[in-house]
Length: 118
Image (cartoon, rainbow, N blue to C red):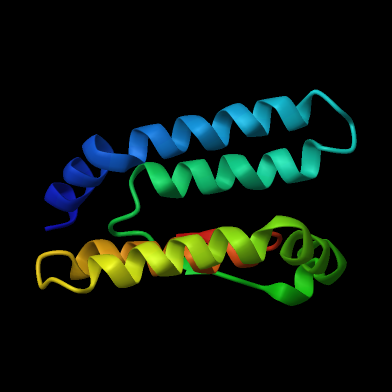
């Protein structure tokens, strides 16, 4: 199931979303100030590319100031988008596994600093 889910996800949305995250991450890494945020976007791109079979372990206490700034500037909106899309997926039985992946991405989008992907 993990492999089939990753293949479908990759074809439908994963590739485009990962390219978008990488492009914005590269643009942010041009500046010195944007490098930490760019690294987090690369982390999100890695997860959004093939999310099935991976877990997100968030540790807010590792970088609390960076996480608060992230949540205020863009994290809350990105997480709300993934939650909304996940709820739409969960309307059908076939979409439930994809909805779960959206909720996983929302967790990482909300608190990326200090989070690990296993």
